[in-house]
Length: 339
Image 1 (spheres, rainbow, N blue to C red):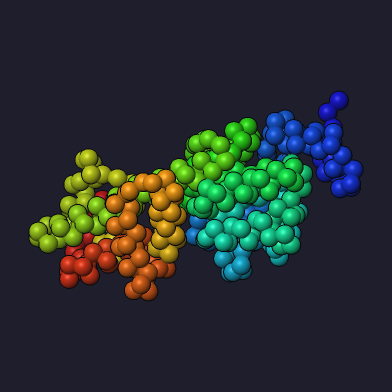
Image 2: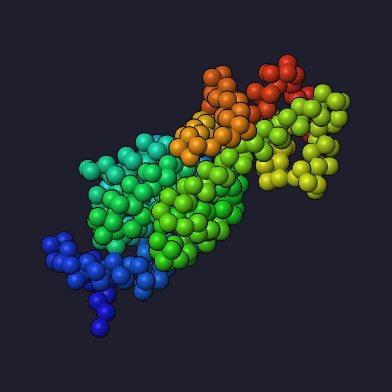
């Protein structure tokens, strides 16, 4: 007769670590217990622009949610919705079965997940699952997976794409790497956030997200170059964007950012600073692979110029500012056409 997972969790650590019980715990966590609000406690580290919206979907679906964020004010809206506050990632994980993280940089990921004293893995119980949704280094995903496995836990790298609107609307693209059976078990949670795409073994989710960022980088350069050209040619840039949106030049980047640029709305759906970090990781991986991607290198230089001008906390659509400076033009007086 199967041992209930809740009973296993109630046993002292010394007993729970007996090999046969450890095996049962891991097997059940992996295959037999379906994730639902009634049996799964969720922890979430990082409640910024993306994380806050993503957490709200879990709360509305009825999940018990514990959150941790270095800046308390960013977590307050979730606390008002019923989330619980943890004082550290370790404390959060000790109260959770699945722990999500979406933070800024690989160093942040390492700190919140792997710190031996305060990190989430140090507080996670046998069979627990870490899901890192930060865009980070594939090698770090492999390191986290190995560390989790050594504690009879699981780790999935699952970075996302879709920006702030995708997070708000539950329509993110999720790139998952790791044990496919664990990804499938997490599907009820992923479904609340967007569409999960299984990319392969550990680290493949990160590789897919980096390829996504490479694609976006050149797309953004093309978008703002087209807008500057249209402006210089005397076109109504709003009408121009509307005209191309249904043709071959249409893109998600145009839909998300075209009118924001015209309105000089540079509020971050995704920070320039974080995009510079992502593109830097991409370039590092390209060097490791012996790949030359000149479009990626150009985009990274343009975004670095924004950071140099103190614009790193603006959204990625602020790339228009770099092109305006290069050409001594401004789209600020351009008519905004409603679409």
